[in-house]
Length: 80
Image 1 (spheres, rainbow, N blue to C red):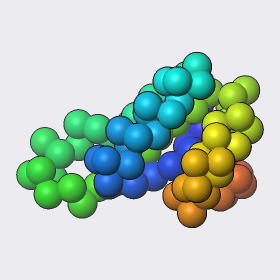
Image 2: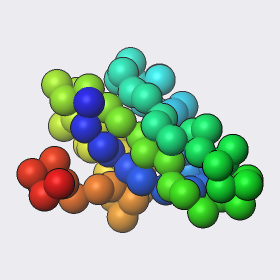
Image 3: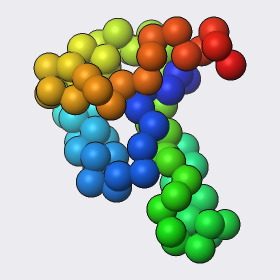
Image 4: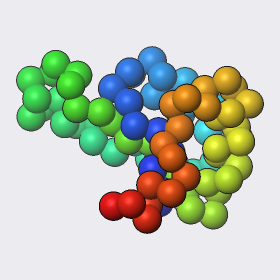
């Protein structure tokens, strides 16, 4: 899986999950339970991960929804 979006906006995450579900794109929200460690402050971002083979379709969907500024850079996997 590859990182599509990183945010601490729960509304955005919910919207993205809805878009991805509707399009049949497999995804996972990582770090969703980190609020236990941070004391529910919302400081630690959550990561929306998508299967590598569906990444191009997911990115296109996010751009079409007008949320292209939320996308992680395409080369983020190689910069780790």
